[in-house]
Image (cartoon, rainbow, N blue to C red; front, side, top):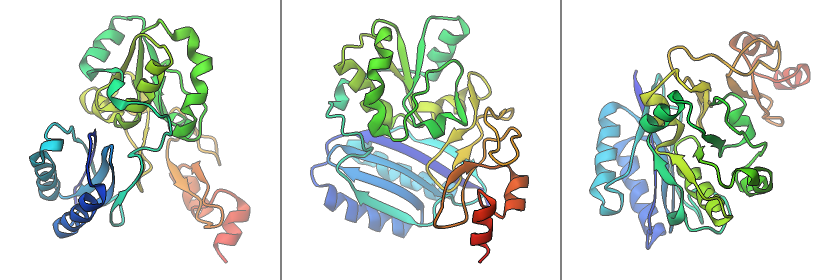
Length: 285
């Protein structure tokens, strides 16, 4: 069965996120979609899955709310639900950063079309990844700066290392755009003069221009863990067990380990979904 995955976010003031959360959870359960939606006073951030009819009804429901009438939904298709259930939760932030920035003072949007035109014409652009190191490991824009960070909270630590680009044209990107809103605001707060972000993030770019300047696979925060970025996707990373090209992430089947690692399908079958001989023995007992 064809399943649609739809991702979105919006920074907007929600007066009573607890009330919104309860009402939204009831609606999602009634509609029968699955996914994870975070709600806070600063906005909403969600990724859901369902049939085309379910997703269309959900998106229409969101757009009918005056707070979210201009929300951009990024869709992709999969064979089965990448979520086990529907979770709507309240949080202090819709993406944890602790940056203490005003997301309204973010970098300007650049459309995928304008970015591709700039790259086609070899314009001087510093592409800056706002994601974690395990995400950029399997996919990134060509020649992009990919910070060696494990959590988004650590993004602020890279500022000293990129100060030399303060007066350059910087174009930031992340999966769907939600992290760039805060990361670009952080750069601007620290004196960077020309900061932009890809509108809709990687998901929007690869939907319009697959197999162009984004290489490898795109990490996603659901059971799939990664998605292809075009019909000609070439892996830029390797299987950690046999070292052949692969961009396929799995979690170790040994629950006590649960390591996230890159594993090709062949090694996955041989290792029985584990990252090492030790975990294979433990996992089978």
